[in-house]
Length: 332
Image (cartoon, rainbow, N blue to C red):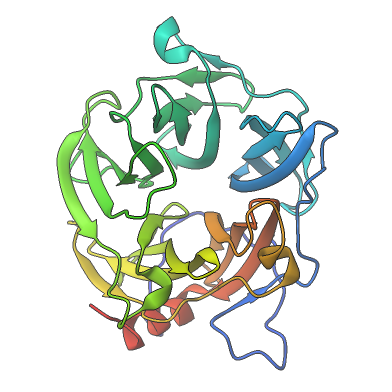
């Protein structure tokens, strides 16, 4: 795909390992996985399903750190190389003018998206059940919490890195109050990061006979990447197996101007739980993508993903190869 154009700032120093000689997969794992262990801070039981972005001369992140009380907390972290992290021991304290909205209950599975002049954080926020919390920061020191994006129950709030049709845009996965045996991806827009509407259906779980790894529920993963072939979306899918849920991830292409329209969607998974650190942990058999770094010049992508709800892994690939894979294996 010689004429592929990829949006974004150059990131030549992003984490990278070449594809192993004996590997034919579209993405491959970091040889030193897990990149973030479960006990990186003294109070953490597990660190997974977290967000990473370029920041100043290095990287910043918002990390899901479940503590040894097993409370779901969000912590900020910094790194020079996006491999070795310094994560703060104290959880993020969001500043909020409305004490009702700002009353912290729990927070998990964050995403971070840079738009215009600030970093927006979305996460699964506890407000009479799970909903999508929203905040912004300029410096990863002070975090300003806004209104929740939706009514409960909702998860996997993932923003687009630019306005669509003049509005902020977000993907989400409406759910219920538990670990739902269902879940479709929806698209929504907002003029002001307060009122969300223009809800559109994006895609549903696949039929079991067509693509079993994503037949129970699906949800958006990292921030979509704008390319000349469409928005590249890495997303997770769930199989309800005889041994419980199995979380894998695949890829889709969304129309640039109407992102609720799916042009291509991978039938096979890209990554599924196969390594010990993905199969063994607090929640076995989970590979859950939440963040990605990419370099438009080389087409490289590095995806951070939660492993068995315990540690964080890293996988590498080339955007052009992922797009080719998505098109060749599409079930749309």
